[in-house]
Image 1: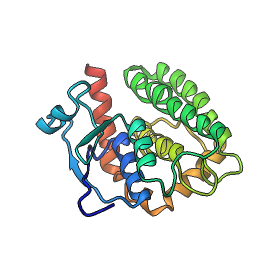
Image 2: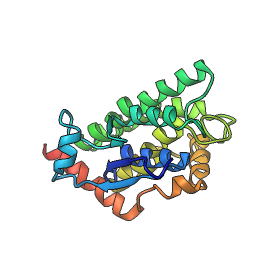
Image 3: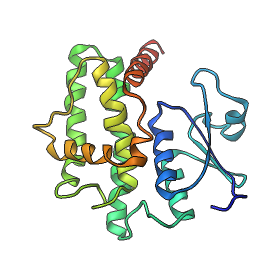
Image 4: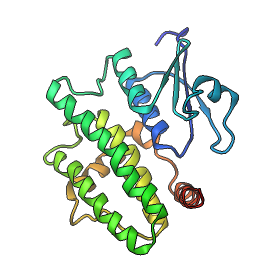
Length: 224
């Protein structure tokens, strides 16, 4: 990146959606300015840059605004081509995109949003549904260090930012074990591998504060 190149990221420290963007930028070695947003008080800058959804993350690159985390990841990958995030093989690339959608569009709603609204019995049902969804992730990791093989890629950033470093902390806050080592050995091994990667470690929210934040988010969902 040249000294004159502008890269700015608007995010929230506890959000997996902005954390995954930070991971991608660090993996690519892209220097960027980070702007912390406040959940309850959206800044004029955020509202100006994303007037439709009014949500983070927002990436600004040389005056251009890119929205939605998975779209931003692909933009980063296509703009800075070294250390590719997506697989080169079209079939493997399609699988990565499919499973990334599964994480954001099915695992998050079942594993947190619906669970936050449910009673104890309902949570157990949702926990089992979440396990079934995560089993798709488990199967894809057999024999691999990361989803793409030996290096961290697109799906590692999406799934990693959400499941171990966000949802599991939400489950811890309500005293619920969803993913056991016995049933998900490949997943647990993958998480340990992720935790050894410096740029991933740099972007994992501090655990105690994050558990408290997830409890708070659950209360917001229940009271909405």
